[in-house]
Image 1 (cartoon, rainbow, N blue to C red):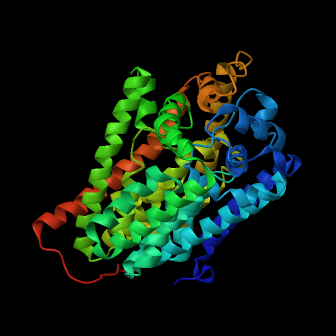
Image 2 (tube, rainbow, N blue to C red):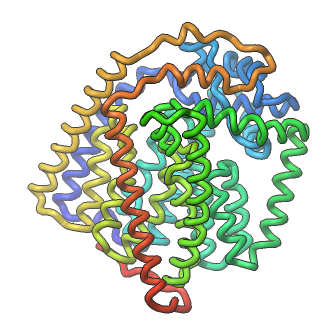
Image 3 (tube, one colour):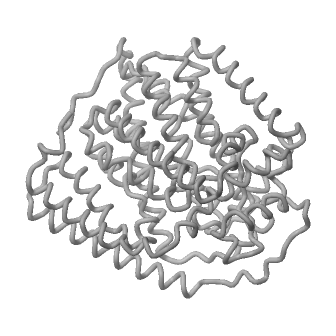
Length: 480
């Protein structure tokens, strides 16, 4: 594996300058109290605390009371807004140990878990794609980390688990594969297509998945009443899908259709049907590409990537799961479309534009990827990096201006009834959002990467139909 010391001098100088600028720009974060960040973790922490008391974490009052006391993130600014924890009971059970710690210490422990997950994911990308480690880090770390770290989001953990499942599947270590796949069900809509593909096409995992499913069911019953689990599937999930329709952080087909004028209920139904179709496409495509290359890691990577293409509930943090497939296809095929998909998915465009201090980190990642694929001249490299920094800075100014002009007060939100679903105030909060022009650019760049990735996968699928599948594992030629 190529080490950092072997990088060309011009590339090292360019990356070093960019990272130094990023470090200087982010120094101002130290003046902000740590407790002001992490409102996603606030919900998970309180979900664990509520479920440990055998209360219903999907109702407003028990979750809101904990959030108002434990974490000041959104509660300080919007006192009547409750951040929901839309995870199944067995997933909230994993947060019970953290809920026993003071909130600040629990959040620090959680951030360490997220950083470890990002490191594991980058390592797996390098091993499965045979790309050099710096290239794998550039392709995945920013995409996985930036949308989740500030808010304390969950996504890096199931992403790392699914990447490990792909790693173990290649080596036919089925118990480890099933353990990782089952634990990744803390985000069911991302892990379900992967587990379905493995269950259908790998007979050796079926009894293991049956045991894992039973274990998760028992865990749910141990921490929550049967009614709570039933309430999650029959009431919480439909309510939460409706509450997120106008969430500008959504990357779902439902949200796009809603902002194109489709009624909310219709948009939710279309997004749900499209997710089901992409589940079928992902499972089938993963099976054929795995046969094409004789590599069962694709049986994990392809369904995972397809699970975040549209649907009714997808955040940018979850889309990072597609980086593994992008890198694996790029390294095997060497096709420009696959490499462009890697570059587009490596950058969380929305976050980079929102948070100007990080505008120099994204160019550093892109330059690493561009160097390994196309090896531009040093002058072109530096010129491109300066152009990217200026672009992100200008886009940030446009977005901040648009957000300032379209901000709507949330003073109209009132405290709901104690037994109201937890998403009532969250929906009212999201409904104050107004779309501005730069929002469409954020989405277009990410969707372009997903589209090119799907096209690369379909090209590999076409190769299957033209010739019989080879037998045995085939490893890609190392790039760079």
